[in-house]
Length: 97
Image (cartoon, rainbow, N blue to C red; front, side, top):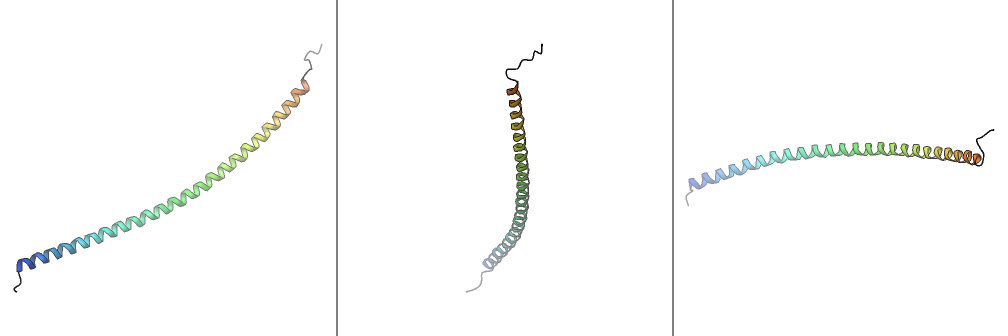
């Protein structure tokens, strides 16, 4: 059976196109893989920043809670003193004639 030069030429062209497409796919896959690695690193950095920020916010909130509790305690003391002073004044007249 003789070889068909047209079929051989078509087969060579198909093979070449397949190899070119395969090489292009490999390059694109490499680019995507590189981009994905970069995104993973950025996500890791952001995750660490969020964790640090969360800790900082928690510390600030805890500090504010302590200040509010202290203020409430002081206000209760002032209120108790005012009640005592007003109670001692009940029934007294302001006329000193």
